[in-house]
Length: 434
Ligand SMILES: *Cc1c(COP(=O)(O)O)cnc(C)c1O
Image (cartoon, rainbow, N blue to C red; front, side, top):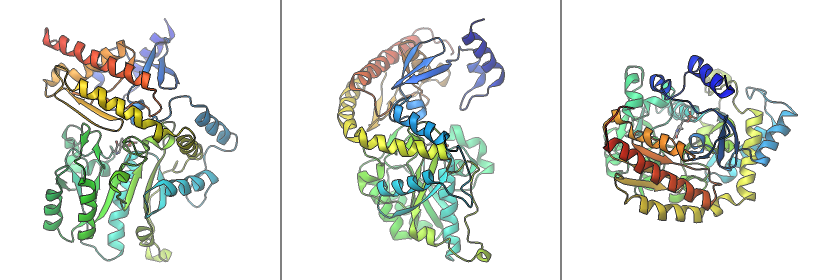
């Protein structure tokens, strides 16, 4: 038996994959990734693929980047992990200072965790506790956007709005108020109707990723910030997906000169290398937690691997590479190219809408019978043509590493267009179930 076949057998037998219907999984040949180089991933059989979704939206400078590799190795020569509970270490300290330097003004404190979900959970708990401790005890509710996604733990699911992922857990979740994405007047009505009851508004600024790349109209984020100020409500901006250059600026909030009360960061923070997250907040929120131990104003939250030293070292190297390689500056012509090509793709048969901001792209194929699994078919066609993409339902998502060359970007777009055509042709023919 070949090694690939043996590994596939073990995977089928022992592994339960995330966001995956294992019944379908076991009917297909899984793709086993062995190594990466730049924007490419290679499977155990040596086939090469463009990483079209940045290994689920987190890779920035490409795989196997010498500087990021070196940062991890050098830290391993010192130590891999020690706790942040009662101790500190140089990497976490330097990284916090760097994050504050590049974050919007007003954000002054960094609280580490390990995933986007925990970054969001932490912001929710901090916002709630902040109001409680300043005596504003009626502020117990949260406003979230329809189709919002903030992670998979129960707190972050509570502020989620994607029924397919979230509805099952409703009985376990806390109640939230749902605002219409992009509609500032609706937000105003909600905040007015619940005056004094709301702790915070949580939102993905500019683009709601997992909701299907929903792009907000210009000025919406700015308007929400102003409404929050007027109503004494904190604003949590979840930049787990949009952060680290995805929308064309380091953070999406920069686009509308908004400083949130909380900024949630994860995915791109280590360039897609290691699990690390950060919740940034203001000095005002931070001060609200100060007091004698007996006052119990402490933020009682902290994960074992919080502020992991190897992850922090790689995150620092990630930010250095942003500077040295002028990643954001060099991204601009790629965004222009992408926008040009997407305008063409929007005209293709079967494409109902293309939504994008920077290098976050959703190509919507419209409402099809879910049994046809059109988005999934596009993925399989793309794989045959040398690109890895992953859809959200029938929305084809493109999110290549920021470091992708214009040439490779063209290839990815060609493959995507061809794969959409091939998948549509297959479902137009005999409608077989997949
Ligand atoms: C991916 C994502 C999360 C969850 O991050 P994990 O690291 O997968 O827990 C949270 N918020 C947004 C906006 C995301 O895109």
